[in-house]
Every structure is written in structure tokens, then in C-alpha cells.
Image (cartoon, rainbow, N blue to C red; front, side):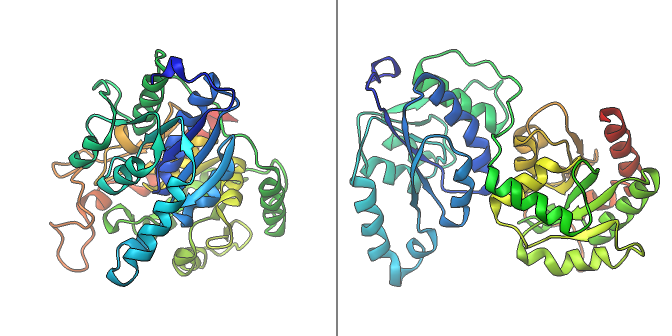
Length: 363
């Protein structure tokens, strides 16, 4: 069955993209493309439960099917977790399944599901995944960014032409927007008041610029822009380090800590309110891009052209050094206690001036 034959009044689609947080927001534009042709389609999404709240921004969502990655990774819980997920996947017949994850484990569960058509990438992240696809999509090399690759796959399925373009921001989730505005007022930021969001954490050690870098950059930025404030955001695990950054400032009304105090939708709406976001390469960086907030991203081991913030409005800071884009989770060249060369090669004051110029040009 091809895209033109999906002519049921209510097309049933299973999206497979369990993680990570940034990857889910990279996939939402592709789902929106599908819904342009099939506005009444019903979407089920196989997802890591930790990120299920992100699907509040998925139109036409019928259900989030939890992918129990931890249970599947343990011998003691593998069998019950496997059969529980198998039964959930088999409970409904789909007109279309798309595996945007491209791993063996994602592909095999897609294969277990009952569907007329199962599509995925011809060059998935794990080669074995391809054997399960009835429709393997070859993405042209010119489509580098993950958003473009996902959108091309969706267009391929629907047999429509794909041309990259600026994406409209995510629709506002009203309950979360109300909570976000209340949180900002609680720390003294009124509606329309300018502030920069700061996310200093990331999953890889090599992606995490040191706390001192954020302190020095913010001090220079706040001197250059006396009306600007800063709000540190992030996961609960980053709360203590966020507090250390906050205590480096004498004026407690200009740098505040909301790390660990939000769920995903409230984080989305806080980032939407932000004038810009200074961050490491992380999942929330892609949320900021998805709500059309300028990102000021720091890049060392990864390639910002492939997995950086999508769109032309962003600033991407990456030094020109031989070991850049190494894709190492920790720096193999560092002595114990030494900062990676990429972290030492971006000047915080120069970064602050570049951010100030960008913010001033938008005001």
C-alpha cells in the first residue's frame, strides 16, 4: 500500500521514536506533514515514558505507548516487559507505521505490529533495522539535519515533494503556558520583560561547558544589557550546579534558578517566553528552536549542522580546532581535572557580545 492508497476516513498511524527528548521534537514536524494530507489521522506513538509529556504537542494523538527500555534491558524483567509491549503493539491494526528511530529494537517492535505498510530509513542508525522495513527510504545527502531527514521520510511515505522551509512554532499548550507565566511572576519577571533562558547541562560530559563559563558569559551579557535577566532551567539533576551559578551574582533579582521545577510542557512554554537561550547541545535546545526562540548553542563533540538547533535565527559557537566533532562522550585528550580543548577555545566575553548583538537586533 502506498501513500496515495491511504484513503480511509480515519488513517491509523504508529510513530516509533522512543527517545531522546530532542529527537522527539525533531520528529514532530514530520508528523505535522503527515497530518496535512490526512488531517483526521489517529496517531499512536511508541515512546519512552520519561518523555511522554512531550506528546502533548503532537496533534491528533490517540495514545502514547510506553517503551519500557529499562525493563527490556534487565534479564529479570525482560520477558514480562517484552510480552506486555507485544500485546499493546498488536492490539490495533495500523494503516501505516514509521520508524524514525532506526534501531534494531525499534524496528522489530514495528515489525510485530499489524500494519499494511512499515517504513523507515534505508540507512538507519543500526543496519539490521532495515531488514524489517517493507519500505526503506533513501534520503538524499543534501538533507543533513535530523528535522529534514524526518520530514523527507514523511514526504516519501505520502509520495509528495519535500522542500526544507522554516517551520511554524509549536502550538501553545494553554495549561502549561498559564503555569509558566505564574512561575515567572513568582520570581519577579512580568509579562513582556526580557530574560534569557540558560541550560548548562547535557547528557555527555564532553557537551557540558563548565559552570565558570556560564557565570563569566552571563556577567558580561548582563553588563551589556542592563534590562535583561537570566533564568536557569533544566532537569532536577542540574539544580545544585544551577544554584552555584546563581550564587556567583550579587544581584539575586537578575539571575534566578528554576532548574528541576518544571515538567516538559511548562519548560516548553518558559522557553517560548525567553528572549533567547544560552545552552549546551541538549534536548531542551531543540525545544527552544521548535518554539522559534533564538538559541545560542555551544558545540564541541557534535556537528551543529546535523543535530544543532534547526533554523536560521540561531548562533552556533564551535571552535576551529583539529579534534572538533569527535563524537566522544568524554574527552580522550584530557588529563584528569583538565578542561577539553573545545571548552577552553570559546571566549565567554566574545560569546556575550555576540548574544547581545543578536538580541538587540531583534528588539
